[in-house]
Image (cartoon, rainbow, N blue to C red; front, side, top):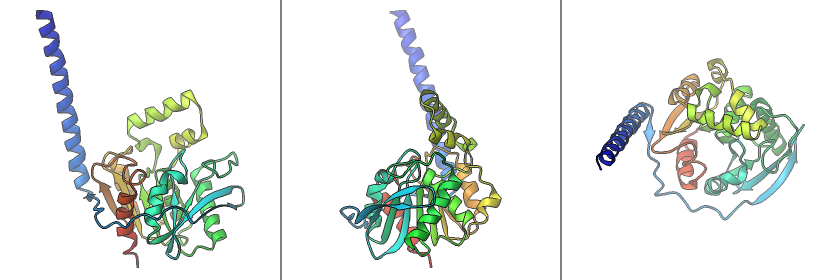
Length: 279
């Protein structure tokens, strides 16, 4: 009986220490986030989503056949780009909400979804694909909204082709693999050990953005991250501070994907609030 009571006390102490540690970590994250425009998304006036894409098709670029879906018609063109190992279908709900105010071109990046796999992939190549897509489709100063890898592609497009975009919303980008939180890096490396994949390799090796690169961006830019994202807050701030006149927002209680991939209402509230104010 005494041993049982002692064990119970030890376990209780462990739980108490863990709870205090988690509480301290949470408080630290909240305090840091408040310094950089911590926001709560208001979805009370978000319109109903459209029923689905108007069309789906493929377009032949210089070295990839790119699949895309078009949602809405008549609004300003907006290119929507998914994250690593995803496809345009993962952002279907977001696209259907945005289609109320924009003509949304939701694309599958090379080596993803229904687009072709030419064997090579990196962010520069994906940025080139986007440029060619814009030119092939005859889009005039489109907006670009990217999530995760799509956000990295968006930033790369914006500094490589500074006159191409009319505006950029970067959701969950990192400037360097070293800025991932340790648990996420371990997760990706473990996945790569089980099943080596060029998409995992890319996340572990790229991007390598510098302040000089980001300083070339001229279009209005919104740098966004979740409060509990997979990269250090300092990296999101670095991206923001490197882009002249950019805006920053940290979405309260959100992780890497909740506000953009899992909630079309929140995505619309976030994205439209920024884009509608671009002159």
